[in-house]
Length: 251
Image (cartoon, rainbow, N blue to C red):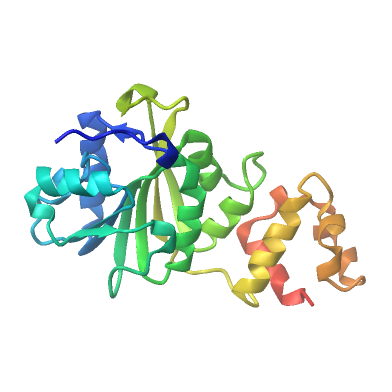
C-alpha cells in the first residue's frame, strides 16, 4: 500500500536508519514500561518498538491514511493505534509513561505544552524538533534563545540537547535542520507559590524581554518590592529558580 505526504500536517518522514536506531537506543536506555509514540507516520521508529514485547506501546496518529498503512504493513500494531489529534487526546496510560516522536514542526511547541499538562505521568520525552526550537527548549539563562518555553519546561524537566539531524535524513527534506532532545523529570521542582502564578510571571516577563524586568512585570508586585535589585535584570538573565522564588511575592 502506498501513502501520500500531507504538507498540511507538516509531514517529513524519517528515512535514515542510522538515526532511527540512535533514537531507539535512547529509548531503550530509559527502560520504559509504557510508551506513546506521537505521529508514527510510515513507521520508521514504530517497526522497532513493536519488537519489544514487554513494552506497553501505543501510537497516536491523526492521518487516517497512515493509520491504514501502518495496520496493513505492521499487523502487530493492531489495537495499539489511537486515531486522534495529540493536542486533543486524553492521557493514554495509567501510571508513568515515556513519550517519543518526530514531532510535526508546525505543532511541536503545542505538543510540549501538552506534555506539561501530563507532566505528572510523563517521566521522559525523546523528541525531534526543528533545530532552533530544540535549542530554545534546552537553552540556559543569559542566552538569547532562552525564553518562555525554556523556563516552563526546565521547571519540570532536565533537558539535554543530544544531536543534530540533517535535512536529507527525511522524506521530503525539510528546509531546516532538526535536533533531538531528551527531557527527564527533575529531581526537585523549584518551590513556587502556584503553577498559575509561575506561568503568568514567566509569560509577562518575556513579553517585554528587552526591557528591565521592573518595567515588564510592574503590575504583578508591590511598588516597594519592585525596588529590589533583581528587577534591574532582563527576563533572560533570571534562572528558573529565581522566577519560581519571585512568585511568592506576587499579588
